[in-house]
Image 1 (tube, rainbow, N blue to C red):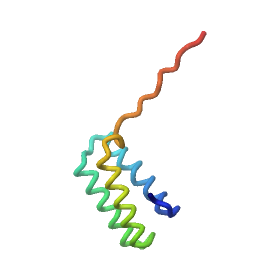
Image 2 (cartoon, rainbow, N blue to C red):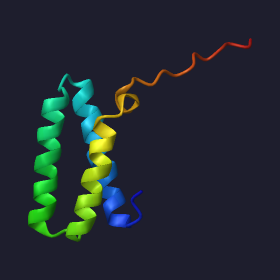
Image 3 (cartoon, rainbow, N blue to C red):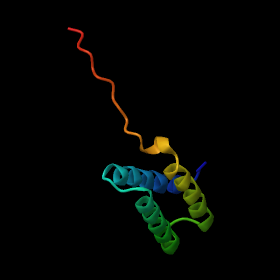
Image 4 (cartoon, rainbow, N blue to C red):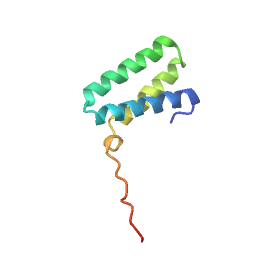
Length: 82
């Protein structure tokens, strides 16, 4: 579980981008390449500590391989009570 505030923000931005890419037709290989580039940029920029980047990587990989992460959410139809 991520507990560092900045790491959580990076995780949220990353997972939002991964879901968006999935819905645009990208597949797991593409998502993994994006993740690798994102993590490389974090490591290079020293935005967060290396051990936090490692934790972020573990959580993001878990997110990618969880099938429920990319299921389309369906809203309930609004019923008309008139």
